[in-house]
Image (cartoon, rainbow, N blue to C red; front, side):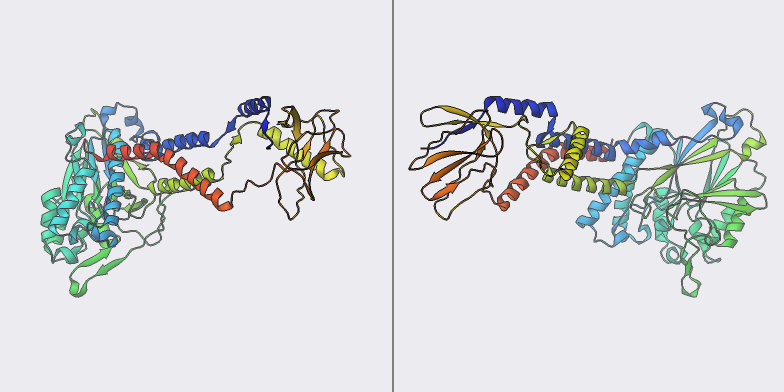
Length: 564
């Protein structure tokens, strides 16, 4: 015969009510919670973070007199530096390789999102690129160059027919577009190729009351008898000093500054000092960080700008030049790309005094241009955040209890734990509280009589023969003297009272065996099986989380990638 035991229905319902009352947080609740956390994280990292500059940045005011005037008195120019769209020359990966295609996709996607979600919503009147549109521009074949040009147009929406497609765009040439004098003198076709797509390299344009002077800085320190160097300096010499409009000098390569000069609070990388490399036989420059001191002073004296804007350095730097006409501020703007050595990509908003202003004082002319640096999302930090959250998700899903975790009463349970720990430490003997809550089981004997008993654990004694698992129980009702049990075969149940009040230990004697029943014995499952079961559970829960968030992530990717 077998012994049939079952939990008391009232006990089970009480446990279920207690779990609901305590707010048990099971694996499925955890999965739903983590799914929502991941959805929020993806929405922020892939979309909402690009809206942050709209609240943290704004168009700068000009002078106190003009700042109180109407917005019609301001032209708004968005300034972008060093996109340097990635190609096979960037990291040396083979063309069309998977790793290069992957890096190009995420780099292009970042700049496209930044341009369409962070820059264009400011509604600029004009857009200015400070050079280095490409990365390996001078060294690319015509096919590769055209491919990079198509990507550049896609990133900045030059092929899209929208209301923003009619915004005037001005370009500067950079060393990654045409190279330095030592290269383009030997390969003049790179200049022809550049000018066909982006226009002249030395030119000027006027916005409102301000004249912008664009200089091909790569040619200024080249061989003096060189055609490109002579052409650039002839353009500079032709400017009339009689022009009363304020001027802004635009150069890709920054003007000269002494070594170890502080660059201001916005710089995140170490200061880069002057470095100039020249080819043999005076064939020109192969690389330089800044223009030479002589070229810089000549530029400032001829053009007399109120502001200088430059790029090339990939990080922010503000420097004030001392000139005969007064101090001149130069802003070197950091790269707009997250793959060009700067963890904090940026762009600049430039407010320019409008030509529609009826009366402009000389003081307003001297403060006719104002700039504001704006930071873009820190893409590297976002990806690190994704990785850390993925690791935390796996750890939490792996270690979370199968029966859940109570989400209420933490403070009370903590103090109760401290109180009990102190009591156990100070007390020598701890008497069991008879009135404490415990679980009950119903046991039927062979005659069909039911007995309600308490569950309790006791040590297991076993012999070397035919061990069967039986149990030792504490009786729950005062006055009870034994437990009726029925076993097939011979054996008697003997009830022996213990020293504690209302408690009896049930011993079953079978021949020469005496066993005590322990309901808390191991389940028999090996650790390997339990680990496999836990792993399967984690995989299932991860699949649930991914089933919701992967489509969301892909939707956000292609929403921004597809041309409007």
